[in-house]
Length: 223
View 1: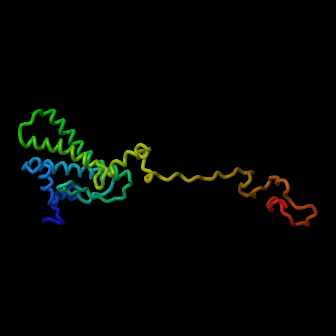
View 2 (view 1 turned 120 degrees about the vertical axis):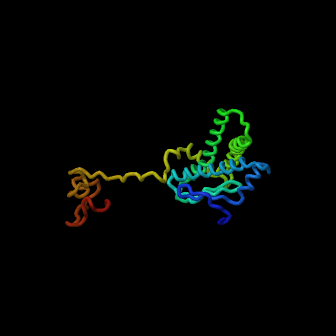
View 3 (view 1 turned 180 degrees about the vertical axis):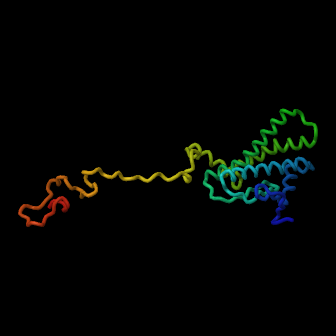
């Protein structure tokens, strides 16, 4: 049963995987209107792997994945947490990184297998290589809501040293403790400040001042 245009097909790690009704339209558009069932299956797998790449990074950074949605024109990994800007950039790279792994694995498999002869093999190889590569390029465009709008922000942070550690996650510096004075020094316990020191020139009572007035080393400035 559709809920908001989505059909729930599986649960991965407690996260719902849902398909949108536009998925067949997107697969048909990328296959140029041709009826290619295995190409459509491969298109679905590419988008799913892309969103799982996002989800793996979200889980590794200890945030929560809410749902993985697959639509005809891409997908969405819905998640919650309190991410830093560095986390957002890393999560954005997770999708295209997963696609890159799929692309490399497919090329290695093709080198090992050699020439393909079956129609289903050609369809899957086409979507896992050329279509997959096009999707990577499109996703890395620095335009919201594409992944490139967040992904490319990671490079300036790494070049400026931001990749060495997240400032918001660093522990606060230890408090500075004042070294107590040694016995006999001014300010030591049981000894008033300035005791034992000669007053500066000009301090002290005026000549002829009555007793009890004036002030010693704790009086104001020279008169």
